[in-house]
Image (cartoon, rainbow, N blue to C red; front, side):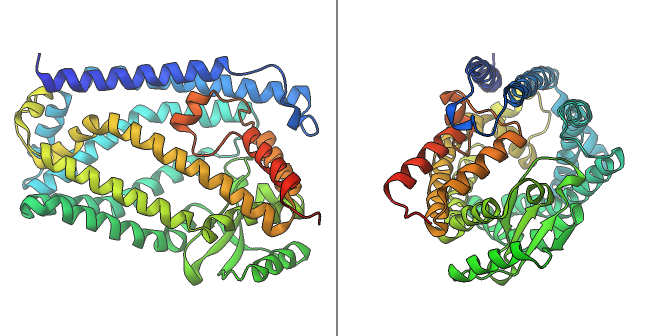
Length: 418
């Protein structure tokens, strides 16, 4: 057997086995006993419902993973990538344009494979647990808008990368790295102004006591913002969330309308303070820098296997090309990506603890943030007892029980009563 074929198949199967093992560990970690920290906000039925939601979504994810993995292996071994390549070459000419069509066709096939699962998840599972508010029209228009954004943004970026690799020689990977980093920074400024309004409506927060409290806190922290907005998250789901978006004078505070309906003013300010903590402690820039380093490593490694004939033989390709190398490299990079993801998630979890500390200290109300976290967990049916292995591999946020424990210790040892 071709070494590269053996390696790629081993990576696919190993990744699938890892997902199955982690999912099963997570299911076994579900405890029928409600953690003591939640006794004041959960009733037994709420807790049973959250665990049932975890079971249903986990098992559905395993089913989807099983089918997609099987289809991928069959498609690879049967020479599906070669068939797509021949189809793209029959339509257009030139390495860059052919690469764009080849990639678009693969994305289309992947989208069609995942579409039934997305429909069932949205209109069956999420609706069953009372989350879904997405209408069929909204679901369809979201897909169209997403494809349009991918075409307008992703197409030129891919064309630029292919052009760099076609013409850049030995330093092409460096040009690609710099190009993607610059593009990512520009996108951070454009997304809240151009892209996000395509999908949601942003309305300035109405004048009143809540807005006055938020502005007082923001002024106290000497924090510049471009505005305070609510987002019509209830258009698609009842789940709660809040976030900052943009930079500098374009920076916005955004609350889901569902969050404003469920939390009191103290809790909303505490959630805001947590998000502000990420900015104040430069977590956003640190994670962007880390992502940039990983991107540089990715492009450097990619440059080492470009147009590798053994790899193309493994995928049963008749033609060797740079654009197909980009696709095939994703299979080879998967193990390293998993390892890097574990490290990135660890750093992200530390940042969440740090932002919690900032929020508790700057507001003097650790109990408000703790209560907000408990409400968010209950309303979103979060898994309160994830397995440590699942946390290490895939959780960017610490389990809420650990966050509550850290806040309780902080309140007992550091914070003044307010």
